[in-house]
Length: 242
Image 1 (cartoon, rainbow, N blue to C red):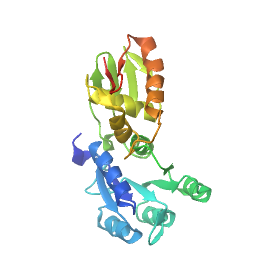
Image 2: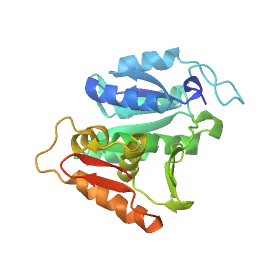
Image 3: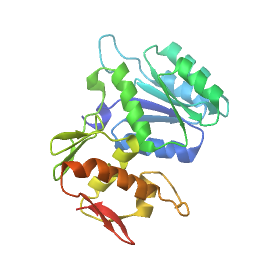
Image 4: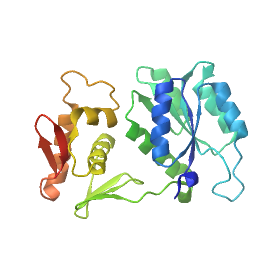
């Protein structure tokens, strides 16, 4: 599908840097994205979107999913979600909540289709949004992308599944994001700093961080029983695919 045929996601987040990351990632995955930083802006965008015609999978700029920060400068994201649902009953809703705010999580679970805690992994956000839309929308609403291939490795970017030599490999969202970045870079060596920035969204490398080494080890344990060693280490530089 082309980009304009993808599902439309309304991102309501008052922190510009977070909103930018979400917007870039979702558009990269061929979603249409509308953004707002306040309740008022979100309601204005929703008012301007056209409702889906009866019996039609899509119509114009209808919003398929709202990704809502719970704490907004002019109101509560949960109340916004309820108002948006009143206007469009079939709207899917996913909340962004603070990890240390159990009341927010309880409220999100009681009303929304899913919730994501901050800080988050951007690939997990895309995967969770895709999963929610699969449950709530016809299959032809979702963007379908051709699989990524490298040797006997195949990554399906629509179902977030991985196969090696024809056999399924079960990966966590972070493992998948790491492997996908390596595949997209082909046979090139990528540095630890690049991996931390693109996979974990770290702007600065945490001192003494071993998260990259740990997840590289996880991937090797899952991939190497199915074929020859795939991930190579260039000491002092980074990692790549053989």
